[in-house]
Structures are given as C-alpha cells and as structure tokens.
Length: 171
Image 1 (cartoon, rainbow, N blue to C red):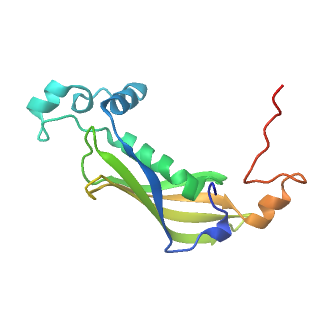
Image 2: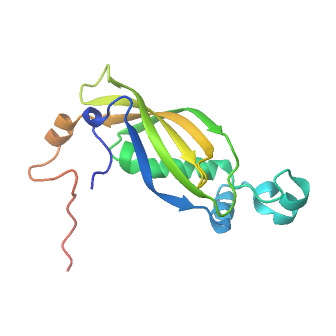
Image 3: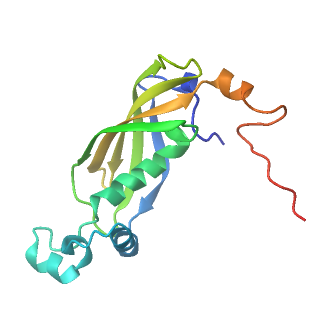
C-alpha cells in the first residue's frame, strides 16, 4: 500500500477519497477539548448546550474535525512530505455532532517545482470533510513540500526500499 506520494505522482485536478471514515464520539470530542484546554461549554457541558444554544446539544470542537481530516489525508497526500508549509484557509461550514461520521477527500489544486532545491516540489491541495449525510462540514487549503522520486531513491542506502522500511530482528 502506498503511503504518500512523490512530487511526480501528483496531478492537478486529481481527487483522493480518504477511507475509512471516522465516527466522532463524545469521548473523542471531550478528550481533544481537554488536551487543548478548550473548555467552552458548547463542547463540554450537555446541559448548557441543550438549554442555551441553537443546536440544543454539544457541538464537536472544529479543530478536532480539522485535525481528523488532516490525519485522514496523510496516506494519500503528505505521507512522504518533507514539510507542511502552510494552511492557507480553514472554514468550518456546518456543525458536527457526537455520533456523526466524517469522510474526507482532497483535490490537487496546483504543483510547482522548488525554485531553490531541485529535489523537491510544492503541492497545493484542498481537503473537504463531509458527514454521513453528505453535508460539507469543513474545508481547508494547504501547501505541502514533497520529494521528487529520483532524488528520494538516490538518497537511500543500497537495498533500502522507501515503501517498506526494515525493522530490527527480534531477539
């Protein structure tokens, strides 16, 4: 199974559908909020959300949905990345609730060779996240620096397969 892509393997207009999806649980949401110190009651307090908000229930914190989609895209987009250069835009389009399942897809928007280093290029992508009903919930654009295939292979020691790293022998 391929993990990420080399610069030459990206085609402008290509769409990568990320699978599997992820069903968001209350535990996922609360743990992410606690780890990131986001204690907003919209995410953490069911009574508050049920009585004082338009949704009448907890809303999953948006940065968790963004992080989930970013992670889902790694095997298709940035698994071989040298660096994630920027997040150009991030929009939370619709709320996500506990029990929703998130699916993602990424479109290649642009690619260009590095002006200063011939062994790499920069790929611009847009990732979109949808819930189980097909409602768009999150969309973001980012740029990723990836190696060129010929340089990546030449940089490895003899006999090393970049797709299958070796592991130490068990004792």
